[in-house]
Length: 294
Image (tube, rainbow, N blue to C red; front, side):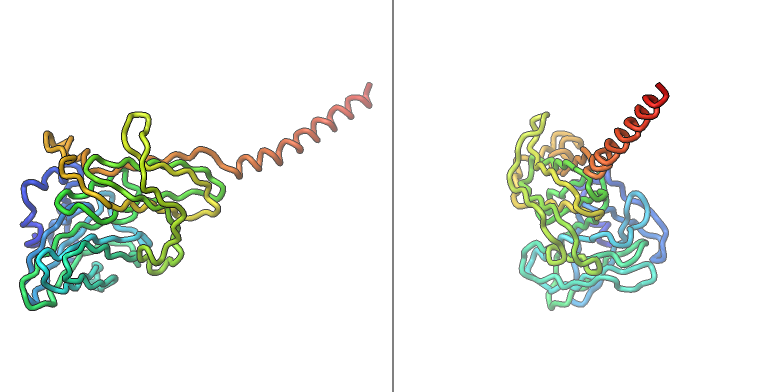
């Protein structure tokens, strides 16, 4: 187990009740694999490198997924080199985390399917303390943003066919204010947010859903068969909104929930429009044949 995993505090266990730590053997050896949207904390001596095996509850990470690391150096030391490393020990994504005390979102596209580890190295002259959580563009039913790192982005995805009509509702938890971006990816090699995306619509205000919950609403028609992304950006934090009464209430107070519904298809409608004249013509011909018999 990495020292980062050892430093997970009891206060964070509520996350693991839903997003479990997955013991797994990989090319990196026996390790504790930490699923996405769980907070991790590192303390790095100058020149020290630490690694953490990552996990996805449903199996391997998939080629082409957008991968996000929301990270901050909390004590102004560094900079930190952050690498995503494959099972064959190849660095597939790399970033530099500045020592400016601000939360950064590091992003890129996964170049292959498989399992990965996250590697951090302190390139500064002083001890560096790093807090982070990561995410990827899966179609998970919900994603908590750690109250210990109240910022950054999580991402959801849907894959409509051309002409599909969709409605999307992104429920905003009590602890956070969100800005939600509906986007299409324009650079399929890099996948860097926001540079490699076309933002189609942004919602920074909420309305109540039928149950009274604050929600961001979208309605769109897919003009192509493509992957559509919803980037949920935390732009405000309300500590009083974090409900620690029970484990369930705590989780609910920090969790972003997407609801997607396919409401129709213009292709189906156009197909029916073409079918009706054909049916009418066939019916007319049948009537004419019968009239000749009379």
